[in-house]
Image 1 (cartoon, rainbow, N blue to C red):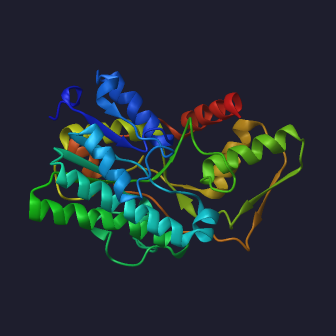
Image 2 (image 1 turned 60 degrees about the vertical axis):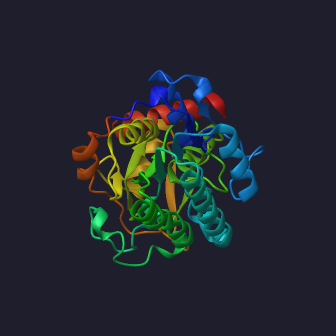
Length: 313
């Protein structure tokens, strides 16, 4: 077991949605705040090599948890394919390279379910990661994140670097991004249904057909899983992170509408894409290798996410 309480830890993206929960869990484990470095984008551009060099020289990390990413829903991915590809590719490459140069003890890379081929058999198994091309609307982002796996395995082979790679499904929960221009499906639906309820609207329009399915992992469960992997997993193989279920976007929308208290109709804009037809992970490897199993039921997680949004909107 890697004892994190005695390590200098760099958490890129540590001020973001997932990162804030990871940092909170590190502190709960007894990691002293002065040993946890959380670079802010206004102070450190992780796509700029000189900035990354300074960051590593100043923080001298022994463990790096690379959470920083430029992310968004289907609309944001369609609008920014070049930026999403380049920024995620370069951030991952620099983070791994400077971790190698500084002889970091362990590197934890966070990939994405968007890396899987469009028609991966359900449930997605890690062995299927290279069997086809990702779904087109988010392929540039997914491929940029998947390159980190190639680099991590290459560095392990040539330099003996202990770099692991985790593949989480769609996350949701407190501190999520509710900006409709870039948010993922759950925060986007929460915002839509709350605003429709408050304005007494009769109809809420949702992208796609509603038939696509997704798997969702509560962010606090994801943060705990990342730390379990950091402490206990040293293998070269990628590892899925999920909750072990799938739900259609139609059922999800009606579930959120019910919790929020919206009593109108949901209509589907079928001119807009569904994205990948189905997403659901085989999570056997995470449970067998380091004991991770999601513990937050979807309804409970949705109520917490909605409560946080209502309090902070």
